[in-house]
Length: 430
Image (cartoon, rainbow, N blue to C red):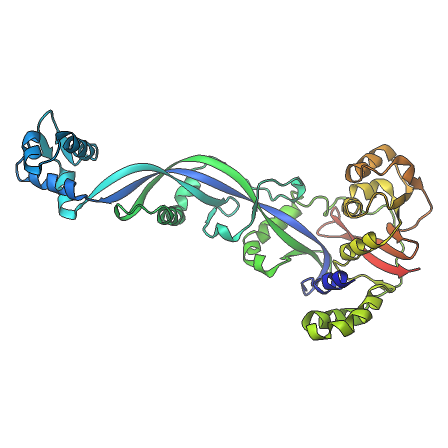
């Protein structure tokens, strides 16, 4: 019971003035993690031997044998140094003679060499919807795969569009400099410079999960969403208008914003939310010193006849499913329930050995409904699913002691072709 009270006290659906809370859900925003091929300019401090060799050549000592005699080093060692300087276009060498090039004169003045190089920038995260680079990507938790396509935001983006990165070259440069700092080369006299973005080497599609609350205006004309956690507010702001637009166009959350109404009007339950329970849970959350005194009071209030508050159903379901010895499910239309989110939510929590029966009033395609049910609960045999008389959208009976009843309401929004089926839950003690 302590864990139940703790979970109940942590339920805090955000208020949205002028809007009716519908449900909690989640959206997955696609983010492109890319590796870019780039050209950069690198600056290297001039080693002492290189500097001495260049100064001698600049003073007219250009014969390799003469340089060996003056420096007093092995010819092979000198040839390695000369080859390196030649590759950097600092000097020009023939069989036994060297001459200083323009870059060599510059290297002597600045005591450094400058090179153009090809390289990659490995962690460029692109927001394809807003066409912007995400600079603080470490603040987000990425997932590689989303199994439910209905929750994925659609992004109209050409994967190999290099221009989008060139438009954001300042942001790419910041990522480039951050990587240079991580892999700092102490031989360099100053940071590398990004010269150009040449191509996209690799693209990996990742997703950021945003838990959201869904609301409908009191007139049913408008919809709104809010982040469940305030820390996600800045990120949601970037995509809120796009999410709502894709909901309107039925590109996302199509299983919530459906094109059909309910088959019938379901009976309600004449119960209200327990305001004393709300107040006591608030005291429990804020005053740890009063918890021992509050716990028995809250326990009685939780397990009493009442309408459940928003987001409470799943918390109470887990508690009763764990404590009970036997559970029955009754639904009005088996096909509709099997295809709804409530089927998977309920069956994924219940222990199959405790489930004695799934009763239904109507069903058009029993075989298909059974197949869907057994995907979530394979141990649910056909003989457990029986036809009964019921007028409720959904009811769960635990040990013939507690009943949770779900009452579905059809809300028409935006236009006459878009519906939301909001389910309100009630607890009754038998």
